[in-house]
Image (tube, rainbow, N blue to C red; front, side, top):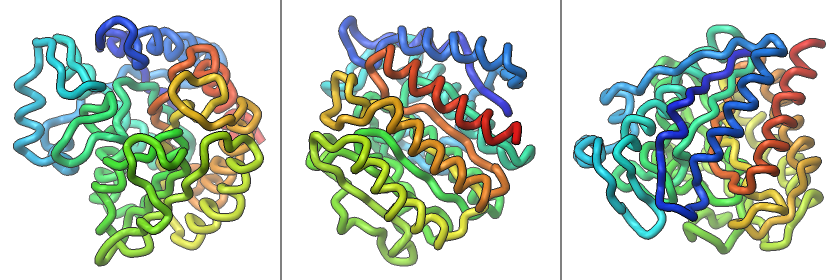
Length: 308
């Protein structure tokens, strides 16, 4: 199993008090050390090329973001750049592409511990703490290489940017569970793709207060059967942990145990359907203790299956 991580992910520094804090990178670093000690290969990622980013994002948007390199700026009320942010965001996208490439090449799990997150970044717009859409850029690269890709988004927020990138795509399936109604206001159950991509988007909105039972049921009865019917050969997971009961932003009540069970369901599908080719890419998760617990649980789930 292969993990992509870098100390540089601590260099993205939103204003003090921002939920997407640099301390999240310390959680990633601790997990990387644990994995290295348990036999994982830990790699320093490369930055995504401009061409890779432009497969998902409009060229004008990419140019505008690259022009912010080296400066601090406010994009919107939630989304900021520090002087290092654009370089770090390119590194996050590159780590995600490399994780998917590694999962395909080795037919085993890969994990990208990255920030800033990406799933809210639309083709022409940064929002929701996100600059470049890491999971979408990685999935696009795999699809362009001829793979049939499914993206599963377990974050508390709907991945509006990922859906927008692929809602007309027949070879990329996007499934999301998320609190609804909630930021960013998208992800209604009726949003199921358009044109050639009709039927390749699945949204399972959950009401505020939903916990482990509802979360696990959504995957067992809706998300995983739909992915199996789509029959991907690669699975990409937008691994957000802000549906956790301790998270300060979300209103769902999922425990670490609930996350562990759902991650086990997803990993089991990837082993059955995709020969183990799965890449997990971090998104949200703003309670540091809960984030650490859930990432530890993910590593345990992946290791348990890998050593059978």
